[in-house]
Image 1 (cartoon, helix red, strand yellow):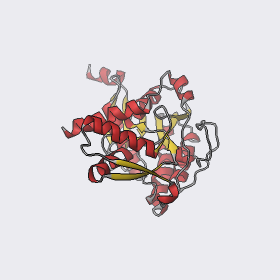
Image 2 (cartoon, rainbow, N blue to C red):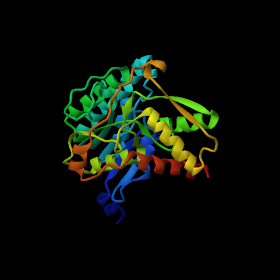
Image 3 (cartoon, rainbow, N blue to C red):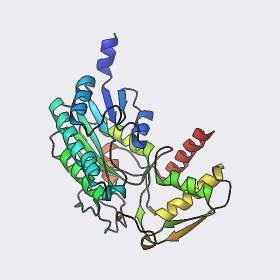
Image 4 (spheres, rainbow, N blue to C red):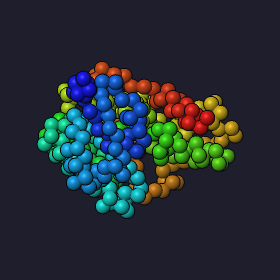
Length: 299
């Protein structure tokens, strides 16, 4: 009886399970699946033999690859590490999945685009990354697309969660320490709650007909400044912030960083909505839900 139950419940493997997306995936596992989450310490995706051993030992039917080098500025100096984790590891993983008939969902980024557009990017538009992070992520997604594996590559943007390192948590910390924060107002994108992205990853993992490139974010487009203002207002309403905070808009030129950012990186997710039969969640609703999760963790 136990054996038959396992056969009827396919095993899904989540790599990068210690990160914000990995944790979000483990929190919303579809009931018809079994899941095994592996952190970097449990399975280093850059160790080809270790990765091969993990897949051989667990024999999953599907893999969600949430492991990545996401430190955009640090990647400019740590090019080798970014290349190994974002480009070479997905290529090797895709090869292993092809050999074993495993379905692969790989997560990529809006940073594959240069930000010169003024309307949301389609999956058919030509990538033109402007930094090491975007270039290595593009190489990784191209390797998966060319691998022959049963795959879906989902690009996303501005991901945040109740835990980990992300813009929302950074703003909450700074706003709790200071009476004013300055945030760039001339970079526009679409925030994506990790919980929203996790839901899409599971839909893609289970849909054998969903092949190729997909775009996903929460609905809407805003600047980092507008996002910070919303974080302040929602967090204040919940009592997460108890003192007044001023959010000051600044230009990108006034806040130099090691890596250049796309000025506009909104992704068009309409094709994904149509193919999967889903609707995007308004970004402000997703933010409110995520802040409520922060509140629950702190209570």
